[in-house]
Image (cartoon, rainbow, N blue to C red; front, side, top):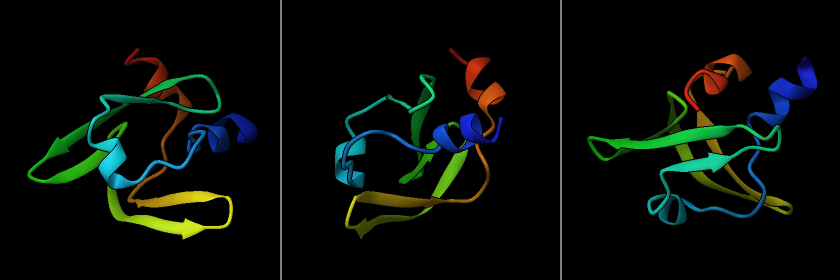
Length: 78
């Protein structure tokens, strides 16, 4: 269950906030589709608000979010 939870927070590739803007969903490593929305100029992914975007690392780009995304939450929205 922990592996599924962690994979639900990872998307393959290097997606910046600008790249995300054109998307309506992202496929996570656990195979679920996580909806992306923009409200009042702020992004959210599967209901978690992006608090800090475009944090570069050697193996990708991270975006800080304000809550844990639960696998069941994504599954019910597909």
